[in-house]
Length: 466
Image 1 (tube, helix red, strand yellow):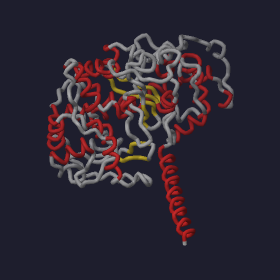
Image 2 (cartoon, helix red, strand yellow):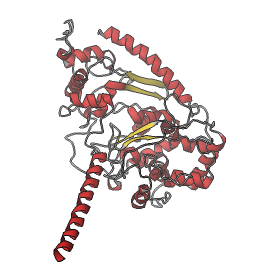
Image 3 (tube, one colour):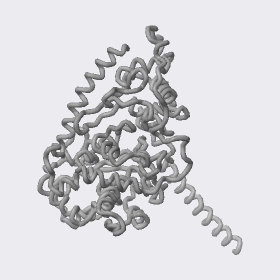
Image 4 (cartoon, helix red, strand yellow):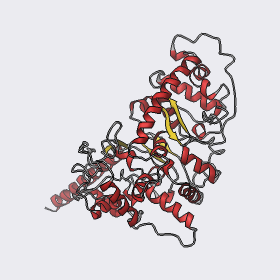
């Protein structure tokens, strides 16, 4: 495919993505020039619409499948209908949002971030309840039930989980900090629930508070370190850069993709400038993540480079397996990111060097972007990149990814064919994350064997005595 053909594809897909983005923004969200009331604003900051709205579905009617290491968790209907929360009292709504207990007494899985919403104030909970009950259109859609494999299908076990891991004390301001810092801490820890994605979890799927915001997993996506660590986190970002990223999803250092792009689309871009600044101020005080530090900051890898002259004008090999990294880059990337990887002068198409997308050790995000593209609707412009899952093979995507990493990013990071295949097939987990289902089943099996061994020893001793 020629660069001109790629441009045609890009323009065509751009129109489609723009239309989808316009529709998505219209669902459950007010336009930028309208000021929402306190209940709607709290729901926007809580990003309720992102999880409780299925693609093409009614706002807040549920049905979206949330991928977790334990299996898919289906979001419920939270509209004021019989199929949703129409019969909930304020107390029952509070129990569901802040303690993970439904009106029928059953426990919610912590994919619903009630562990973070537990920090939300009584006033914001009451305001959200009033807005959901009086302003959200009711829907009678009944999403399918969540069906996780044993032992996770036993919801009663979540009572023990909550006893172990749920801190249900609302946020308490720190009198030694400023009002702005406390507002940022309240939003980050509570409504915005940043830790739900950006904090690593233990084998029981609880957030490791000792590693708060040090980087987590959202299905196959890597939610990066957003502590004050200057190399792996946001320690070298300015307040202005952090606000710009949250508001638009686009800075020279990094671009929002995957779940983070949805957070920008549905939540952060509607936040006030004051709230975004408060979050930024707080984030820069979160203790830096520990562990082995990389050679340089994730946004400092690479430089401009152009090795395309040697391959331009040559006929592409007939067998896709023979396409080289430079040939793939020339055909699919150079038209937008430019021949030297420098991006466009206006920054709409970012540079590929000095970019967190190519500087991190984990490479799932880079491969997923090439597979599926990027879409977000930021203030002032619409940003998108087409995906190439239907045009490129697993081998080609791995080859292209590794060329980009070697040419413009961290040369020690790699993308494998097997990794791309798993990402394409939807079976991949975030790199470095344990298979929790397998570990749990192994633990149960080991426990069962241990119980059998104890019973056998007891019976054996009884037989010997008799």
